Length: 335
Image (tube, rainbow, N blue to C red):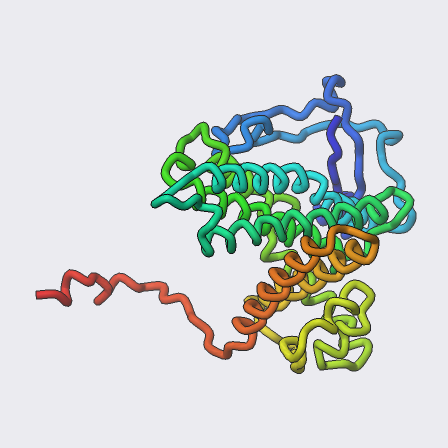
């Protein structure tokens, strides 16, 4: 079966604004989606990748009926899928953590195991923090992603969960690859495969850059409505960030620009996503999850959020030089 979207055609070839959803039966010749070209996957070999041609006739009974508008049904569907991403990330991050820990304990360099070296511990502690963060997200998703809940308006929480969990999946894989060294670069080694296979999820279901910008826009919209410009004041009262925001001494204490450029929206969204994640970890800790893992996760997320906010508050903006070739060869400037 396929889930497809369509827009009604109006007079003059214009399309309506609303979106309709239909279920296709791939076994019905009139509803069959043809795969015109299959691509060679960089990774994720189990998932077919190609170009589809959709030219189908669908019975009206196959149309999904929204409660109000098709666009809201689309948002509900997208947000639910994004909220459920940690379910996929959980096993991945657990495997990264277990494999990285085992490798570092078994690999000795200069009479010392890798596990005893400080920089190695830093990488392992981050992977462990990611495991805990994803655990908190799984607990949240299990209680909020059911079809009994309409998630059409849950932009901040759903986008934060999807974008952050896919970021930390890829970062965990990168750290594991760094720890394994040269052998991790083999095509059949878990570290290399994990690095390649985790990357697309930062693009699928909405590019993370776009999702982070949407988080910022949603927060700024609510701040405007509340006539609040101070980020700390708002996040300290916001349901998804209230407990975590209180753990920041001054990093969140500044006034936002409602008209900030897109790159700043992305930076701000990345920081807010980490604050939302911290709040979920705090909730999991309050329910009895292991305290030392919770503390480590909160420390890593806080450090990341503060580092992102430091970048966000920098005023310099690097532009793109289109015709960059002239006077740009270093060979012309050496004797």
